[in-house]
Image (cartoon, rainbow, N blue to C red; front, side):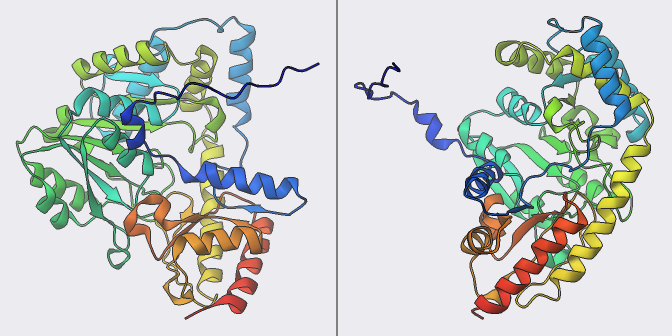
Length: 401
């Protein structure tokens, strides 16, 4: 007979800092979508930032071979030497800078580089400038360590590129860290080489660090990728965040990395020792193959995302109340829904509950995301077509404007 779980008698002494910690709404929406599916509803998933492609076969084979070859034990906290060397060579080539393996820290996914960088550099009372709307974990982590998050607005009128003049006006004596994301989640906007240089000029000689999140850098459809990490004057003040989840459809493998000056890398590695010990060894062997092996799967996936984004934007611009710009990178679209007369969160909820389409409110990415919602194009054209048909039918019936 199963023992009945006792009701807790003692109050939970949750640390006050937990009240400052946010979340990632995509996973909350996914839970609700799964609940509806369990009730027999058909839901089209356009909420999660995860490629709908399988990990390339050569990478899977490398991981399986690694498991069979005994790569099932602890490894160095900063990553296996072979992967750190491979990443250093890769970043040196893509960014036209010299990177050594000692400047690379391998971590389980992209978020640890965000977490460890902020933990290592940011003090209570410091200011952290971050894009808004933007990936919500940045604001969450800044608040968690007691810093003041300072949002720089990402505007549709600028084609969702960062306003360097506004950024410059926000820099103060308390600024410790500036966060850049290009291509940008959730808008698909990018930062030009001209703006990258202007940001560096705005920082000048001040001892302000930059964390540049380039997890979508291989998924750019217009122009070329520009990185502040490539500028000599910013080299010792920039942390590059990248990983394997988006480019190689390896979200479940949990494999990412940060590239930074050697002394900071040592501190970040100590944080890893205290938190995760190390990243799984067999996934790192697969990571070596991902970077060194055949890249045709990346090109194929990029071409398919490009085809889908064009289709989705065209369809959205025909739906009453919706208007949508063409994203330049990543695999999201960020339509303006002002014309519907609905607020972002209630519209996203209604589309899930009534139209069977899971998407995210723009406010899931910050206060300046109001008037927008985010759709991922990481689903088949067939499913996307069904979703847009449902959205259009719903919008024609429920438009308030």
